[in-house]
Amino acid sequence: MRPLVFLSGLLLCSLGGLAHHDGPDWPAEHFETGTWSPPHLLLGKSGNYNPGSIFINVRTNIETDTGQAPTIYDNDGEMIWQGVRRKTMDFKMQKLFGEDVITYWDGETNMLGYGYGRVHILDTSYKEIYVITLPDQGFVANDGKKRETYVDVHEHLITPKGNIIVSAINITQGDTSMRPEGYPGAWIIDCLFYEIDIKTNEILFGWSAYDHREFLPLERSKLDMGSNGEHGESQVKPWDAYHINSIQYTNHGYLVSVRYFFAALYLNFDGTKRWMLSGADDNEGDIQNDAHFAWQHDMRVFNETDDSMVITVFDNDVPVRDLTATHESTGVAVHVDLKNMTGTVFRHVNSHDHDPAEAKTQGSLQLLDYNNTAHMLASYGSFPKFREFDGDGNIVMMGQFGYSGHAQAYRTLKYPWHAIPHYPPVAVAKYLSKYTSDIYVYMSWNGCTEYDNWNIYSVSGFESTIDQGTLLDNHRRNGFETSASLRDPNAKFLIVEALQGDKSLRVSEVIEVPRAFEDKNEKSSRFLRQSLRGMN
Ligand SMILES: *[C@@H]1O[C@H](CO)[C@@H](O)[C@H](O)[C@H]1NC(C)=O
Ligand SMILES: *[C@@H]1O[C@H](CO)[C@@H](O)[C@H](O)[C@H]1NC(C)=O
Ligand SMILES: *[C@@H]1O[C@H](CO)[C@@H](O)[C@H](O)[C@H]1NC(C)=O
Ligand SMILES: *[C@@H]1O[C@H](CO)[C@@H](O)[C@H](O)[C@H]1NC(C)=O
Image (cartoon, rainbow, N blue to C red; front, side):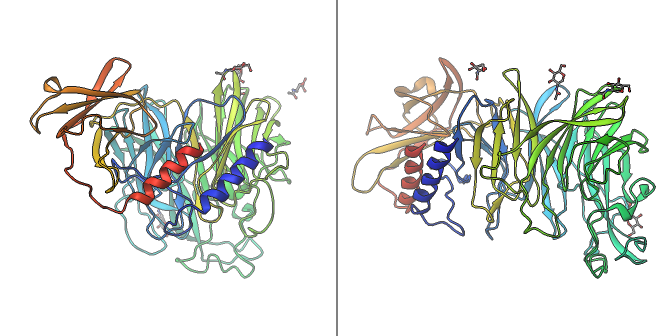
């Protein structure tokens, strides 16, 4: 790893000096064929890595944030697809009725670290096939206002039955006087989840943490209410007692990550407790276990039988009330033996003290089935990096998408994504500069994973079809956007065609070749892009 890390350090320095952008000068890519602007993804590779595509929505602190669009990159850091530029989170691929779909949350986030929004489900042509909402169930928000839909940012998971599990919050009032800093009438964030039928948006099941204080007693929350109980004093500033951040369907119900209890809670389908596994040192769960985890995210279940299962956990291990503490965030896999009621750590992925990553907030851990070894992809939330570990715990890939403190991503995930868009490819023709007569053709097809070359045809007018055209050139695909110098300077109109080998997939609309250079002051972005390409 060391030579790679050194190399990326060099890259960072040289990139920093290249261009000035809004806010922190982590570079973004720019294209001639559209207004996409993905943050540059810096990748280091040192082994056999999972070939899947990288799904991420980068959040930045920039006021005019355009970076939060759901974005897919390939393993060379080239963008494959970018979706809407809205505040989106938790972008992933899932299966719905046996088909691959992409899903993401979109909505408003609040100062409490939660959100109110909806879930978008797109098919492999990027058509939106469902939008899931959570209508008002008598929810109270900290600002007292009503919303159209209440799906929270933390989880949306499609079940094998074609339902979707979503998280939600409600601000309620209760007695916390069993805590040293508590008092009656404290304002509390209740964490809830719902299972919703995707086809009808009908709510099939709902569950609330606050309603189950018999096994989630408030005195057990690891997050205090502040030394004077100031968290919880008002509706605007409620106490975050539970912080549920993942809900996984299981054979008998749900596995819920209760972040502020350091707990994995296994619920039956009726919402009663089956068992709880605790990552805290005092081991207050039902399972005797040697797995330590704290302030965790993203719990997932594998190989579940009635006797045992494997639970993977992203262990943030950074105390929420003391973000200055230095702890490395790691990934843990626990084998749970339900006959003996024991939990045993059998994998722990970390940096081995080299460049430790601290995820103060957010983060994910994904088990990747690859080449018969269980790779793990850890992403570090507020620390804008991710790492892929092989089955032996070696880092085989690492990525960075912003400067620490300026960029973050809730989860970063990898999937074998194959898509052909329902819309056609696009092209533009431009003079390279006002000093030359060279014309360039730029071609892209946002999200298409299945083409590898382009044909460029000259046609006589806007009404022409490709059959009436003259083939001018063929070009190998070069990343997201392919550029080619125009062979025939007399061509007036063009059509481009995306192909996989010899097979035509789709043609663009007719575009007009400009008569003269148009100065749009785009030279610097082109320079930056070409410089970045040159470095990869
Ligand atoms: C799969 O693993 C074997 C053994 O480690 C390795 O030689 C091979 O290159 C790997 N295949 C891929 C596609 O990475
Ligand atoms: C939300 O909390 C309020 C109290 O603030 C309560 O009246 C209401 O029933 C709760 N709603 C849900 C869905 O739990
Ligand atoms: C699940 O079980 C299979 C077969 O025993 C095993 O190869 C695999 O590693 C297990 N997965 C996990 C996550 O433990
Ligand atoms: C479970 O308990 C049984 C009986 O006490 C013991 O033989 C077995 O080794 C235990 N298994 C594990 C995985 O600890």
